[in-house]
Structure formats: C-alpha cells, structure tokens
Image 1 (spheres, rainbow, N blue to C red):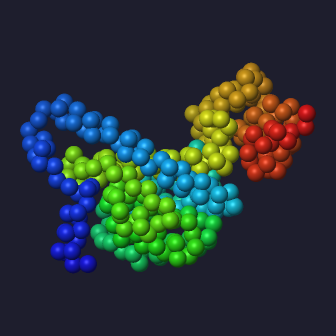
Image 2: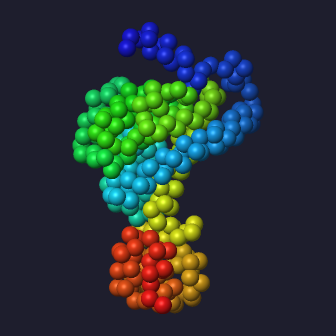
Image 3: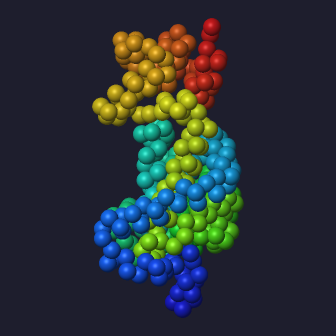
Length: 307
C-alpha cells in the first residue's frame, strides 16, 4: 500500500476523524476539558450495548471450544495489543487459569508493552510467526483487536488463524472494518471520533477494554469458574487474596472463621473444594474428586455430592 493509499484509507475511518468544534480545546480551562472528556466517555457503554448480541454469540463460541481444552488468544498492536496482554495476564489470578490458556500477543513482543516497536504493527508475517509459535488447533480462538479495524498485524492474525481452522473474533471501532470481515465474529463498537484526533487510546481503548472484559469474564462464568458472582477459582498468591479467599468461602457457606480456616487448610487454600467440604459435609479428598468429575464446576459437584 502506498503512503497516498494509506492516507486515503485513514481519512475514511471514523476513529481518525478531526472535530473542528474542538479545535480550541487547548485554550479551555482544565475543568472544562475534563468535563468534555467525561461526556465523551459516557457514550462508550451505549456503543458497546449495541454490540451485545454479537459479543454474546462470540462468548458462547469461545466457551464451547475452551471447554474442550482450547485457548483464547488476543492479537493486536499498540494500545489494542496491550489491552489484550492485560486481559490475558489477569485471568490466572482471577480464575486460576493456566497462563497458557489465555494468551496475549502484541506486535513487537514484550518490548512493545512499554515502548513503540517501529513497523511491528504493519507486519502480517510477524503475526503469522507469533501464532505459529503457539501451534494453533481448531479448538483455539484468536481475537484480533484493532481500533481502526485495519491494522495489518491484527488482520493477518485473524486470517491466518481462520485458515488453520481456529475460531476467530474481530474487535474494532469502525463499522464494516477489514478485521470484522476477516473474522467469523465481528464486534465493531463505533464510538466516534476521539477528543484528540486519532488518539484511539481514549474512547476506542475504553470500548476495547469493556469488550475484552466481557469476552474473558463471561467465558469463565460459562466454564464454571465462578459460583454465582463469587471468584471461587481465585488463586491466593498474596495476603490480600488469602483474605479474599476466606471472605468468599464465608459468603458462599455462612460458616464461621474457625470452620473456614480448617476447610482451607484441608484443601491447600483452594476455595472451591473448601466450599464443597463445608456445604456437602465431605472431606478435602472427596471434594477434589467430586470437582474433577464435574469438570471443576462447583454447582455440578454439589449436585453429585452424597446426601
């Protein structure tokens, strides 16, 4: 693509549009600028709401594959890539997933998390190489994330994953995007031009964060990683999370502190089996077996516990 073609393509994108009415924003009082930004951000949830049926369909497809052992892989560049890495990195402590189960790929690799890696987002070959290192299977899902919906790295990732038989989702902030057309599930959250022209770390970034929150969180709910709205698969890796684990067991069972501490000690600090020992009156070993037989789903394990 020539530089002229690229300029023409960017000029057609809503996310790149210039807003003449904000041309004097730098002359406004700070509080007025803050009010403008806040008003802009307020419209993002409504734009996401318009895509909820598409998000739900994508979640159901992702969860079905992950239930069979598939992985969830995010691929993007710049802000979009960082948001994917962020979402992936938060799944192990929140849902006790294996770090290889939800993966974030960013154009340019880990270095690109803190600095710009020149040219990385323009490389489709880099995307294909990054995905090939994961040895994708048809049970995996690749989510391309790109505000413009045209970033070569994200588009190539989705195209390559689809050719390999993996499920594909495209998350963009422009309608009729190249990324959306390339993916089986297109989620195009149109938030409009940014307060600072082309700065898609703003509304577009917020929209992408909301969508990725839904994709991972609701998928984990569908996989039985929660009990009601409790994080029963939380990994107690620090003092705060150990205290949270205690609170979760208390909220789920109504048991006293001494009973809870005994249950957590018997189950190695794991919340799900601790709840099961208290609600079903079984020992830690039996709780672990029931959970394994129920695919880690606490409600199912409770239903199959001896009466």
